[in-house]
Image 1 (cartoon, rainbow, N blue to C red):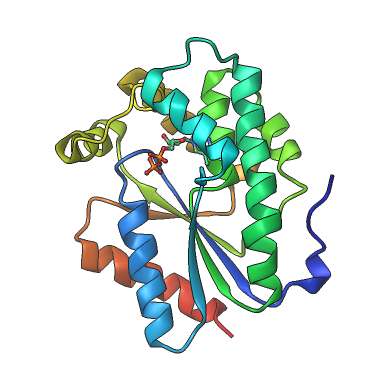
Image 2 (cartoon, rainbow, N blue to C red; image 1 turned 45 degrees about the vertical axis):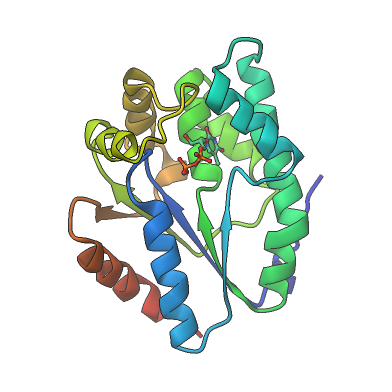
Length: 207
Ligand code: TYD
């Protein structure tokens, strides 16, 4: 079912993507702060959410994929996005907010693509949801990302194994046309430099 009618959109939709440990959450929050300081009504959202489907997903992240098929996993992410779109994304965009999203459908195409699904099929399933105005890809090698995650003590067994992250990274950067919207930002720079590079990309899009 389509949850989105593009003609009712007033706001701006910005998405952060990248492998684990790339710095998405930090940069998404910095961007929200900067947007608010410059007078914009900005909202931070993240997927997976804390809703019913997000909790099922977190369970896989903590305990591994033992009893969950790839098809079920893919469906959990789609269900989570459907709920998030209806409850949060669409209302915020309709009311004119700048939505800053920490992971979205590109993670779906890359992470579940790395399980063996055709990314094209995953993009197709995600057509029903609001499509972003800008996608910022924080670019880092999986090893470097994982080092940061491990330093924070947050690694999870379901999604953050190095060989899996290599496949995810390969799908993200594999040239599928669905990823062509992504703006690549070198995630090994300092926090401030990354934030400035992002701001330069976003400024021209602001009302
Ligand atoms: P979480 O700890 O919530 O997020 P993050 O690493 O972004 O701080 O873990 C979520 C995991 O879910 C992350 O490893 C990426 C993965 N993921 C998918 O596999 N498919 C998706 O569609 C999304 C949104 C995330």
